[in-house]
Length: 381
Ligand SMILES: *Cc1c(COP(=O)(O)O)cnc(C)c1O
Image 1 (cartoon, rainbow, N blue to C red):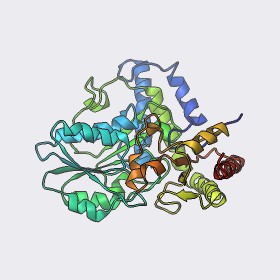
Image 2 (image 1 turned 180 degrees about the vertical axis):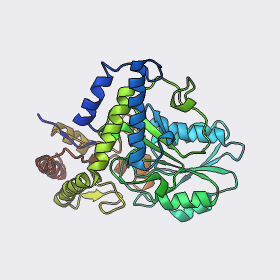
Image 3 (image 1 turned 120 degrees about the horizontal axis):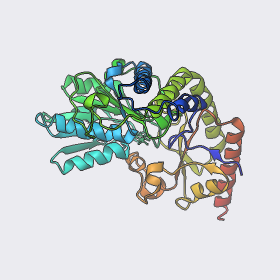
Image 4 (image 1 turned 90 degrees about the horizontal axis):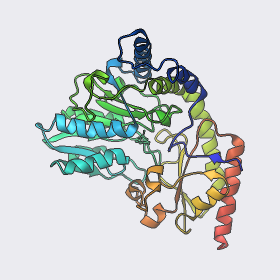
């Protein structure tokens, strides 16, 4: 059976342009990017050019882009690295209760080191309130971290406004832009953010590479100590072909952003319209400018938790519970609880995330499958 992949928030396939760009650097140009010989320089130049491309895509300077092994590393590095570099100023961090585990668990870890974390609540749409942020700020607050777009319900947070408040209080601001990058057009200088995380495999690039934007002058300690790679900030031999693939994928994603989003929104609108039913509710924000174009979180009311997802899998539709990261555990999703769902309802929720390569036919087949599952469950079998 041909599978229908509707789990692009978990990961995306590698685009063919990125693959072709990477191939020479996996075989012929394999040299260490820091070696001084000819082949080393070929590798080094490829990394420089990849860094330039990524910087240009988000409005940064090349020297402000640091490669990491994942989005998770970029997030953890920010939380721990900023905390340790600025702890003489204070030990208080503000974030939200719906962050990705990479931010959340790094914050939890810092508690052992005497840091105090405020987790802000969100409303039923998944939005944090500016007023809550203002009220949470203390003299010893050193960092505010709020995700750009949520990975489970797709809500886009008011990053620019939050950043302005942080700066008005002399506090650093980080955003986890792993879901947003390649999907939402942004410019780091216009947003004003101090740190921003991204990950290659969420925008049709390779897995195993991410990047952290660190604004010039921002103090951050290293997480991975080693050689002089990444200007001495992040040790480890640079995976040249991954940097090349990530840059190519981002370049293409940004170039095609409007065209892809228009198409994806159309597919999502069709899905929403066609599965509307009294036994179905849509979580968070369904459409408009405050939600990712391809993400749709659906609650199948009064069903056995997990049963719809299981039946979709049998029907050939690859969707996800709250998120892929949480799928392995039995814990209810923090995001879904955060927007007010009960623990049971959080486990009755399915996340569909549409990508640029999904076809109208695939969405039609998915609609049929969902309707037939819902009908069957209504009849009690
Ligand atoms: C996927 C994801 C991450 C983690 O990125 P990896 O490269 O898979 O480690 C972090 N934050 C968000 C919002 C994500 O969606």
